[in-house]
Length: 208
Image (cartoon, rainbow, N blue to C red; front, side):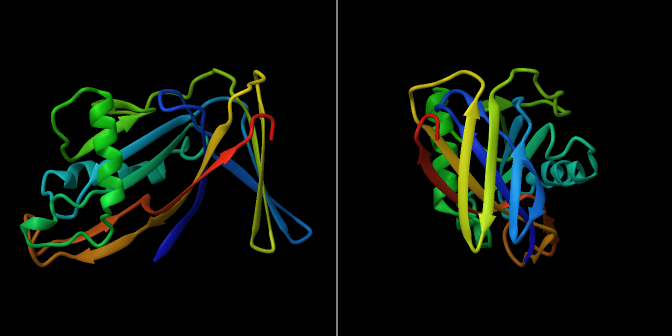
C-alpha cells in the first residue's frame, strides 16, 4: 500500500466544516504540522470498484494530484461504499462505515436514496467540474506534534468558542491497484487515489 499520509481535520459541527491540512517540519525527533489560519475545502467522493460509472469520477479525482492547490486549498477523500458488493465483486477498500457516512449525508439533505459516484463539498452535495478557490474565512490554526508515536493537538480558533471541537485523523492510500474479476468492472485494472483506509475521531475541549 502506498500511503498519501495523514490528514488532520477539525470539524466544528455537523453543518460547518472547518478543515485544515497542514505542512510539516521536523524538529529534534518530532514532526510538527501547522495549518493555515483560513478555511479550506473538504472534497469527498463516494465510490465503488463495482460501479462502472465511477471510473470517470475516479480519474478526475486522481488528476487532482497534479493540482498545485492540493493540500493547501482543498483536501480530497475517497470513501468506498459496500452496497455494490452484491453484484459479485467485493470492493477491497469498501466499508459499511463509509456507506453509513453517505447515508447520514442523504438523511441530512432529505434525499430518498444514495448513489455513486457522489461528490460532497464541505458537507453539501456537489456536481461541479472544478474545485472552487479556497475561502478567505479565518477559522484558526491547528498544530499537531508527533513524537515517539504520540500525537498532540492544539487548536487556536479565530473566535473564542465554548463548545468542544471534533478532530478527525484520516489515513489515506494512493496508487492502490486492483484487478477486478467480477461485477460491472470485470476485467479492468483499477487504480485509486486518496482512498480513506482509516478514520479516527476524537473530541477536543474548547481552547485545547
